[in-house]
Amino acid sequence: MSFQINKQDKIQRIDNALESLHKHYEHCTLCPRECGINRQKGEFGFCETGNQASISQAMLHYGEEPVLSGYFNCKTGRAKRCGSGTLFFSGCNLKCLFCQNYQISWEMQGKPLSASELSDKMLLLQQKGALNINLVSPNHVLLPILEALRIAYTKDLHIPLVYNTNGYDKAEIIKLLDGIVDIYLPDMKYFSSETAVRYSRAPEYFLHACSSITEMYCQQPCLALSDTETVESGIIIRHLILPGQSEDSIQILKWIANNLSTRVALSLMSQYHPCFKAPQEIQRNISISEYKSVLNSAYKLGFETMYIQPEPFHEEEHRMPDFKKKDPFDWD
Image (cartoon, rainbow, N blue to C red; front, top):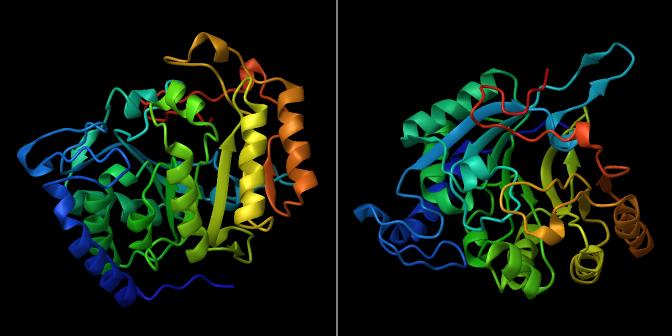
């Protein structure tokens, strides 16, 4: 199939969303934190973000799921992939203690951009051959993103749009993105409120993740792939297994199977690596047995599409990004 968009329809939906969301510039309740700050007056809430989006990196990302980043040709040793056109936004409404992107989520590394400048970043990534535009941590800067997208669609942006979120969203906000977002890529991080409080100060994380991801699923329930097996629309639910939290992970899988579908695409990640402010009990990588227990549960529940990492990463395999570098992931 060949991906096509109705640009006028997207622009109209963006205009409708902006009209509904504009009030959040003066009283921000975009996310479950509901800080109520006035961004127009320079006030900052939990995410520490003003009325402009700040970008740390705009880059071709080769480390996402293969259907997002593309595939490697093992026969020739050459890449067939073009990479995911990834925009890393500064700030975050969750701020996990173990965040590997802490330089941008906690330390706010990045440069504020106007809507026009942000749209230019999107178009440049498309020009470089990006398979999609991948918005990383977009929920706290949704308004300036929508303003930039409106400009970009008038200038021939035509590749799929990925909403790459931590899952701490509000369903009523996600509902306004229907027909705008092509691919949802939410995390589902925690099942227990105790764990969510311990690592992210978000006691109702699971409640909000369930409602927002259900809305995402209603909009984009099935993966649609191109002739080159890259995703054009749909949803992939990510879950990072944490040390000592296998049972929490299994409860998340059971909820997805019972409340959404076992046809939902999952990405089960074993790549956890302790960093930043990770508490003592998670100052280790996960074990092979921990990952296998979660993976086996997913198989038993009958999930049909899974992107997996066969075993926990070895120490030298971790690609911890350094956003002070031109290439944070050092792909070479």
